[in-house]
Length: 252
Image 1 (tube, rainbow, N blue to C red):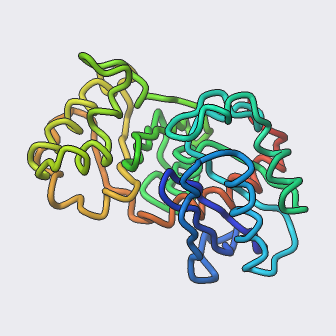
Image 2: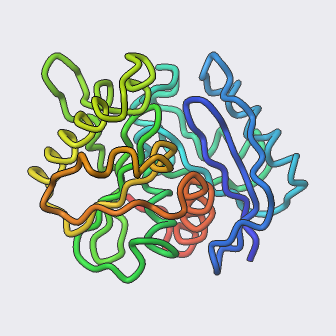
């Protein structure tokens, strides 16, 4: 079954058709920069453009970079504050004319990993960390998603949330070397381990492609592996998550 997966990030909105059984991407990924305003109407328009680009009819799965509860945006993340309280499912369904299922982007990436990647067949508590504009986290217990684990929101020193200090955006903003930034990311993983004590940590998101530059700086007890689906995980997971959630009803 072909499903359109869309991955919404702070800098780009990307989509591709995915075979929901195998997790294989069937088309090239199509990317449009996220509108500068990062506001609901403007972003909904881009999502509609992506659907049109693929000339697609059917349900759409969408990974979204904030806390999403039953389709509603609970916190603005790195987007415009006007997102709070918006029913993203309804907004995008209206904009595209397709039934859209929205889930948190790290949860979507986690779905991809648990179904086709490093997390396949893994029992216990698996935490997916995505490194991008922020630090996303998806949690799975015995393969079942526990939605909206927001470990990047942990306050740290003078920062309201640790992602401001340890995400890829901090590396760029402060011009940090991999060594300096990697130490920060390692500190974050140490806190994750302390708080939730997982059985496995999977590291994904854009920065994971440079895994070899910083993996030697990670010194947690938990086994840490790189997500091999990398940047496509958000798209693949959104498609799979869409299928799953339609089968089981929305996750609460």
